[in-house]
Image (tube, rainbow, N blue to C red):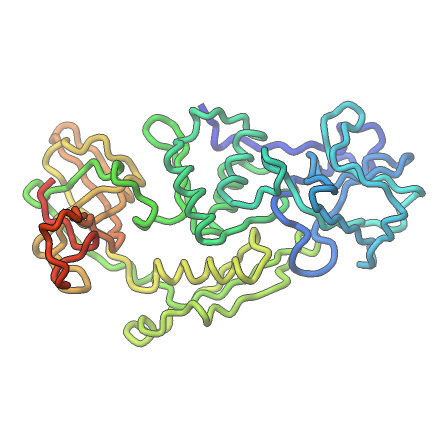
Length: 401
């Protein structure tokens, strides 16, 4: 079983024969770390004081012939002449495994700290890995030893497709040992994602808690009004965001953000007029481009621009016992309405929390209203008039489940 709280240990300079500073970690370089900001973005590690060898990463980088543009900078922030060093981006150095190195023709100590820009890991097809979900999966499988059965495949597939459709691209550098859980949280949260373990110990991942990435087969549980008691509804005012600014292009060497997005293009002016300004500034250490920062900011406003609705209830049966945290479900409450004034029938919710009471044969739920509902698809067989009174697939499904 995957140990999510285990330490992800990076290679250390002390594994090699003549390092400058033995305790330094060889970094993980992920995504396009040649883009955005200015100067060198992370510090290289001297592994050979006599051979003048510096590690750019503790693993192979995208090959030069695949378009990797590597740039080194000296301690004054000046670009180092490429004629002064030779690159080997897949170097089995001293038999300690493949790393990426730069070997200088002469002693480069006076130039330290030497920092770098480059593109990171390549995927199985040889192209740069940049989808945040792909990068998270690679961290789990290549560095944490996760097996396929440790990951809930459906949620990973949907999150990967959703990240691609939203134009999300991740890039960052890991420069010290950290727990796997903290690393996943840091990466995925930059793209409004989250993760948790299901009842079988498999890791599930979501890019948000909306319903946009659901498949029909996932809506297997329905919370019926007659089975529910102690129902309460509340608004999450403190989480509302109708203007999302963002700091991005983090420089890991200088430990500062080097670009900012004002969020104006994605703000919700109507929500600001109704509820007042609710602004937030995001820190996106895994984002390098203005377009991705804007996409994340706009997505956050789309999800949290209006107060989120949370429903708590108690179900007097164990009919929905298979439900777990993060799962979608349907709920029907005739006395509660959607923004259009229609009763909540087959509304799609996400399980935020649940508490089993075996003695009473009951379950208590905390549910997030996604704002979406189960729709009804009509067959194009001539039985429904195309007069505007019906929708082919957008009407609320009013059937009992």
